[in-house]
Length: 270
Image 1 (cartoon, rainbow, N blue to C red):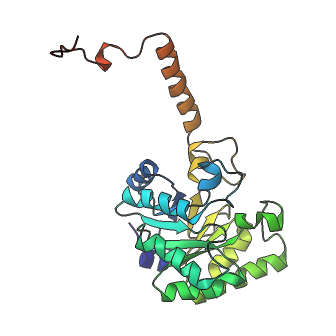
Image 2: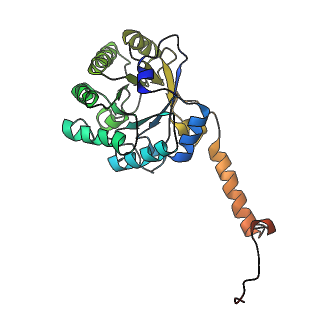
Image 3: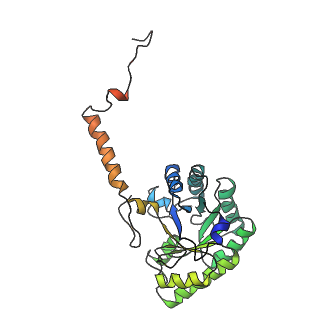
């Protein structure tokens, strides 16, 4: 499985990289068994697993806990911790401490941050301190209160040019890869061609170095799938079927059956 150095040197003739989120040990183990290149412990844990309405309430402690679970379940996958809202960007020294914790205490190999002009210097400082950085441009869900929605970004020339310039600045600052989320495929193609580091697309079309999705979208868990995602399984229905089967058998006194328990004489206890 790849290291940060392997990802950085991924070339156009190499097979496309695969990138999925995971938030727990069983899922992480399944991703590694399948040979997924990169596992992101995303702040999407907030609205996929923790019951929040958005990613904004997710804390550093929550990301740390889920990162540790994923790392403990994997031996070879490249695990990246996604830095939550307000854990970086305001105070560089504090941000370095938060990011370093993910590597030092939880065992991640890199961090990701939602990027902008304010994270260029931070990226350089993190890399200088031995903390590999994946930058994230395009749709930034942590900015939902500023943008007002989670629709496609870079739909005009000005914003596309800004994203390209920020991509170049983060590459120069030392980022080893770039995540591009929910932007037009032709814009992503130009950005990918302009960079030496690989690009991972989430809803950014085919002209990138690799493809990523949220694991709950892939598995069919939840009520909504974004327009750029593809559902590959229907785990929600299988869960409901299993739970309903358990309830039915308990109510009908079919479970536990004789092969699910034992009875034996216990001396002195009647």
